[in-house]
Length: 341
Image (cartoon, rainbow, N blue to C red; front, side, top):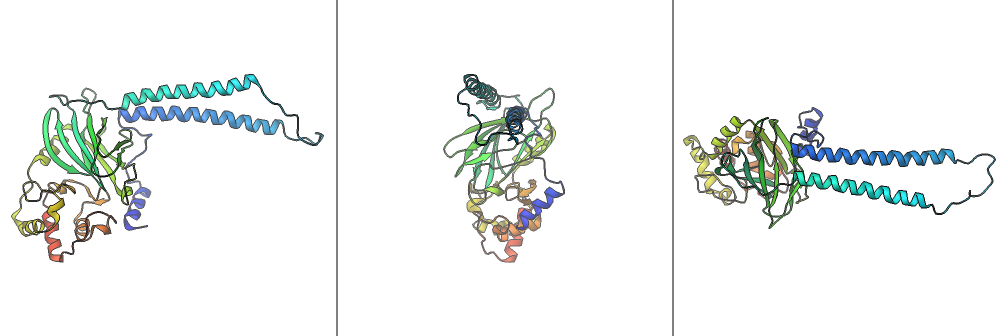
């Protein structure tokens, strides 16, 4: 087990990991899915108990006695009532499950919705990459947004009077991925060349974790989803920060120059600079995120330093190589990145 795996195991043991159980829904959509799961499990459980009960009763009732004649007992073939019963009963059960499943799919399936002023709805385009998430914020409450973040989706919570749903348009930048945050909604695939839709809402602020649920390559298991649900005021403050230009700090001018002089600019983007790449996470407000490497490690100076030095020490197989920079260059770049709040 590597250091990351060990840290996650210790977090689980200490109870610091967020609840990701589907049986702890935090949205109406997840609640409908849980209701269906409980109903299906109840039916399966009843069938199991009935079948096992008949089996054990038969074993006990017809067990061999001391005075039984040797050889097999009389064999009985064909029973029209039993055959009708074991054909009709499963058919009715399957038909009932099809009906309730169709109703749940109808409830949770997101219909195409257009942004409208005053609708309190958030529209985001999600693009899955090997192995990170890109979030393009399109609009909120009818207001057009135009900024990009990575790996952490922020959304406002609703209340008893106002619903604030988030409508996601799911796309893929390379291979198939799958967006799944169990406490907020069902699993929806991101398929190259196609757009799928997903919508959910919640009234409970907090951090909701998920995971790419479609094998997408070597680092599939380390492609975590983080959804931050916050009050409308907190969300507005976050929006204001994300829509602002990148911070300019003269104290890290050398670090900025080093960053722009290297291959970082071919993949990363920092608003207002020559770095306009779109093949890796947008770094304009990097330090507003709690984690790096798609949720694998906290966004601390030491982890950022490890990542710049050699990202494969944190996420083996990641597409970003180690560039062999000098220690001074790495320190300059890290200090520059830490000003991007």
